[in-house]
Structures are given as structure tokens and as C-alpha cells.
Length: 124
Image (tube, rainbow, N blue to C red):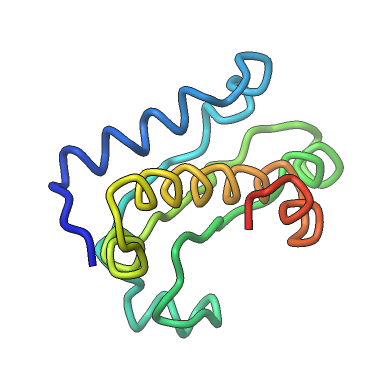
């Protein structure tokens, strides 16, 4: 397990967000990026996810928003689970890389990418 302060962890999340191409950033304006310690019991029950989850996208992908809501922006959320990421990593460098991968993986879901496509891009 790697220790990282909340402030430093949040900074790494912000660095990952800054790596998103500027042409895609307008599509993230209505997405809340939240860092939680771990998934709550309620979240695990509601979203049918495990307690060791690294990140979660909750919302309606951009392409579905265009079809279902006439392009009106939805307020989606990306949850990043700090303790789970810290527990799985054995070095600071690995943790920084995993935070970036997790943030970009969940952003990929916002853009409608499935697990296979994300794996092909190296965001698994």
C-alpha cells in the first residue's frame, strides 16, 4: 500500500484531467469528478459494483445524451476511489499511473466507450 495525502492525490487526478485533449474538454464541463475513500454500501448496492472498485462513471454517455435528450447537458459523475487505488499499488510511480488510467478510463465511459475499446487504448 502506498500512502499519498488527499491534496497530492487530488493533484494527480487534476493532472490526469489536464491530459484530456482540449477539443474534448467542453464535453466534460457537466461532469463532476469526485474522489471518495471507498465505495459506500449504498453505492455498491445501487450500482451493483464490488468494494475494490477503482473508479465509476455514473451518468448518460455523451452520444446517448444527444439521442435521448436532444443534446441537453446531463450532470454526470466520475468517482475515483483513493483507498482502493493506494492499496493496489506498490510504488508511487505505479499509483500515479493507475490514477491516470482510472480517470481516463471513466472519462472514456462518458464518451460511450466499452471495456474492450478502453482496454485496446490501454485504459484497463
